[in-house]
Picture 1 (spheres, helix red, strand yellow):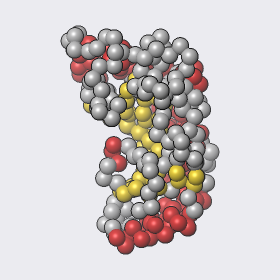
Picture 2 (cartoon, rainbow, N blue to C red; picture 1 turned 180 degrees about the vertical axis):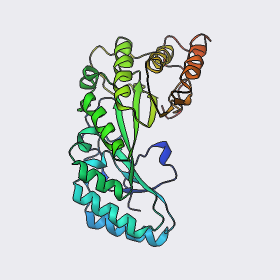
Picture 3 (tube, rainbow, N blue to C red; picture 1 turned 30 degrees about the vertical axis):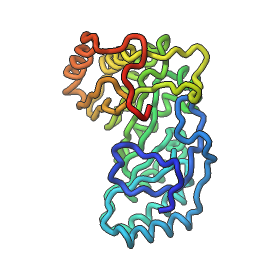
Length: 288
């Protein structure tokens, strides 16, 4: 495979065969994200991608799951995406699903008919970073997306049969913005009703991430308090929820609506345990 570092994929795609159809992110303006900083966005030639898929089909004919990288593959033109998916279907007879990162603005650039065609070709799950439902905070952190339109995009693709795996970032608003962040995020998530939802924690990298003026990092206790407020106001009808990423102080997993009270009890228990750092970020994984 013709990979160029850095190469990222969601934890759930650990078993997928990855095809890097573009390098970097077409947006790359988010203050909180260091994934593709320093990487010039470049879409690979379709002929090269198709050739790589054909060769991989000979080497790994039994593969079923695939992930298209890098950031926001839905920014590619429809014809290019369709051609790549058609080639995957021809080269891998057992193909079950193809997943990728996406942004709402890129999704909404397609017609409903075009999205239906991509789904027919087994484009299955799109990973969408909502980050926050607060438009003010989205603007402050440089994510050039509209919160309301993100809800529209998720509802659209799910109405066509695709899945949306939505990600939010605890701590993104810092100490002063925590309540608005949690409340507005719950509001947008309730509009979305995404089938999959993940909560991760934002941790500032001194000297690397450059947050907005006035940002004061949340403590470990603050982040768990924010998580409690978020979960308390979620009214989801059929969602698998995870907050078990290694960045989170309290690993959680459950389903809405049936596990909501259990999740709240677990969070409340941790808040009352005196095990959380009230002044700093607490214990961090080695990669942080």
